[in-house]
Image (cartoon, rainbow, N blue to C red; front, side, top):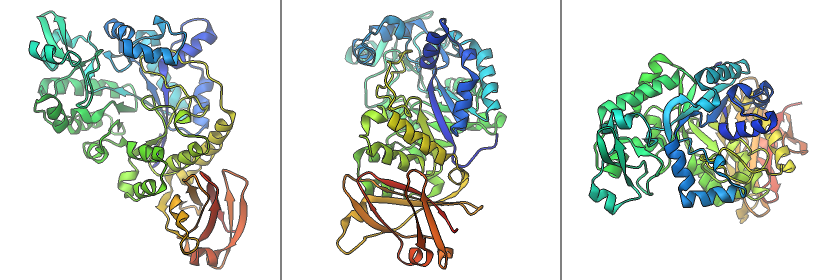
Length: 492
């Protein structure tokens, strides 16, 4: 399966998927029970990778913490008004062991799933959580120095960030996993990246994972960078990611790493050996609903943009349908998924689900399908499947005021795609809550002397224009709020 330049990724909450399948089967569903028809449907939509969230073994200690935590439980009850303890399995990021969960069928079932995915041209992505482990991980007894230790004073002063743990070596005060801006996650224990043996052990875990899948999404990957780790814990650490990515690629040259990363550290993670990094900045600018910052973001070089994972929702963010109003949602999706980079979709996004599902839960609420939004995404995926959007050349286009004093040109974002086979596309979005006009500069000088047909592949608009006029003046647009065109450009 050769890589395409701009792949698409579909994230699935594995445990929720299997709970829904269990209702149909009348028994507990495992990975082997996922129908081929569902995998085939994912491939037909044009996806290249599937991220199966939360397949690793979790334990009873983390589950008990999840069930007893009052603040979390309130969130769970908001998602599931009929919440019961069986719905709370514990976070998929409180990992007891990097072995496939026994309730999913174990390693053999995952291997069979991977082979089935390959039959449909799909690659498998799994989780890697570098920062912490579950409170009942074997290393706590075997290698307690792999974890960040605290004192009784630390425990008294910061009980949300430390806990007392009983080990074979006796009671210890250990730190919860956390980032420097929030209290610790009480169902985890923080790994010590100042310990070189621990780093090698984590590289070993990654190497074993890499034998079972094609890529990993690395949770909060920036937390183990030496400067971030020292700022958080006061412990010096050697760089981890360059060693880890190099070690994995020695045995698996085509393996891919995607970083969950924030704080404008995307480029840093790419320099550390990652293939892709979350583009949270684009997401935030789209939420702010102003075109110029989005357009400025797209001025970055393709050496950077090609490696950004672009999304409107995932398991950490609120659902797009609950965040972006109708109209703005579709405009934001056109910008996100028809721009360069990795195109990252989340299960339930197409259907307009509005309830975010915590990774502690194994059941989702029943929600109606938003047929209008579903129809939009079917059209968008049909466009995105076209080769020009998979491996074409992308260019941000210049915008010109439609007349002197017309400020609404600044509400547009426009770009082109072209491919060696002659395919050309022009995408333009009025990302504003007002009617807007502009001219879009067309970069294809060879169109002069021809009639150019423009057909909107996301709508019913179509017309012919004089190529000389397009090249000299540009394409005139006058669009309602949050409207867009995705034009196929041809010379009849």
